Length: 425
Image 1 (cartoon, rainbow, N blue to C red):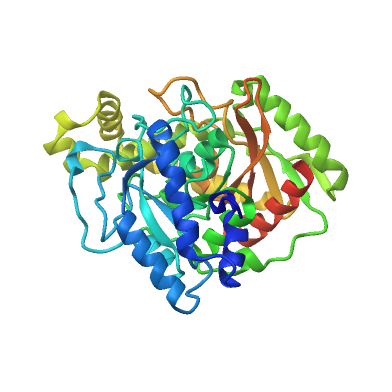
Image 2 (spheres, rainbow, N blue to C red):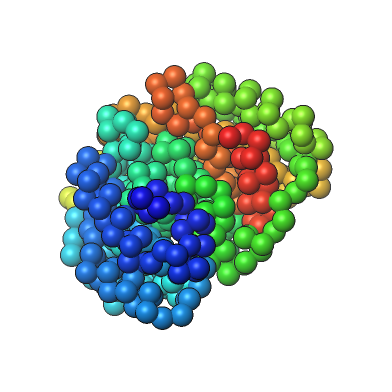
């Protein structure tokens, strides 16, 4: 209690509900942490200090609003906010002021969250990095595209934050920053008011410092309180999925894998390799192609009218996406549909799949945010994922793995994640 900013979201929510901690005291601690650290981490695009203080005081003066009552929240700067600009990490949207909140932001406010500010995103939630640095080492990337949201939670600036994932933009920054990141099942969270990227894969989710925290935020976003009410299992059936690109994993990730299997297998009902579809080696390429095609459609106006304000990397992606033939896209979508059915069948035998989150520790340098290779399959298939932060690599930066759940069984995934973390910590 000496520094409330160090409380995780679940603990802070309990104290606020008991009136043992005020929303204003928690907010002021978070603002002090931001003042101390954000000049180095650069997680935030903008803050609303006075507006946030007014929200906190109003919450303290009234009845409990919901599960997020009094919890400061960071919002990725591709979500519309009625009281803050939404600039999407691009000069095209400089000064843009929406009239209403994105649906996910509105749901969090209804549940009592205090929106403290907007967090840095990569350019239009794509590959060109923003200003954010890794809280553990400012010479390294925090991951992306939800860069600022992950860094702000990891550095104790906020207990919770909103992000999105199309390829790896929740799980990878969670891995880089050593926190829990949750990507719900595709379509479980409304995307109204969120800048589109790839329509068949864009997913709203968020970050907390623990799996329980991420589940708390996820319950509000999905409207499914089973995410915080599901009893932890006594044991698990774990399918091991290194995946077709495991050869790209660096030694730090290999060591984390070995540690996890050694810790989990003795207490699991089953912990063995899960057989993937025979042609699953193409999954990353199919996802990347579909993403490029759909992003080119989503950003058609920016591409047509403001090419001078787009980075060379994004221009190249949009040109690539526009060049893909409709017949190729149809073939990709047919394969994705078949893979969804084949992978879904694995969950008759396994409760969750254990898979890598990122290739290595956070990459050195701030020009790129890392490769989403290990996240592409699950984004394509729309499956729920949670990053488990439990290890460090050779240079002391965070390393972890992800659990993947059956479509629509997000509550079981998050309970399994807590079961696993109890045995990995």
